[in-house]
Length: 66
Image (cartoon, rainbow, N blue to C red):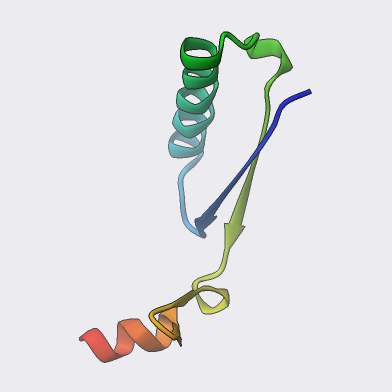
């Protein structure tokens, strides 16, 4: 059973998540010939304070950009 894990920052709408699931599934069908009913996708929403970028926590980095 194929399993795809997608990690995004928190705040995506249900519609945006549904579009991600559809796009990923369609891509696996189109490029790899996989059956859509065998594709499992998990979307993990990660709080921004739990992400790092350029050697800093992302919320600290954003504060420095403003």
